[in-house]
Length: 180
Image (cartoon, rainbow, N blue to C red):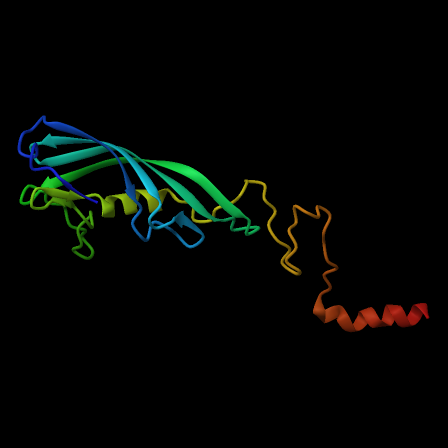
């Protein structure tokens, strides 16, 4: 998703609105949930030229699919994520202070306007993936699956298993012998 900005990039105060539907790139997901590659991503963005570069703001709307981390039921919902990012002209990106302990920069990646173009794909990947739940659930009170037999606990509310400590297993036979 590379956008040409040559027409207004070097004119601070210039703006352009971008309302477009694009195919989703790969890797917009975490382990159990994500956006299917090629599905629609609706972008509603404003691109504003400033002295240092292009400021991009707006929303991206995606359709998310996956499964509940507790009961493994399928999940599907629409997600709107806010976008606010500065793309700096080459040579105008601010210098970041270094961490004292290992000399790494505080900000791992600065987005750049390269050859009068901005690439929205890495930005989209960052904002969508960080908005996805790490452990998605179908509903907050989902009880999940029985750890012994795998049955959905929502289908059988009183479901439980007799859980004997294996150290006492030999004694369970004594009670049966005394009854006979």
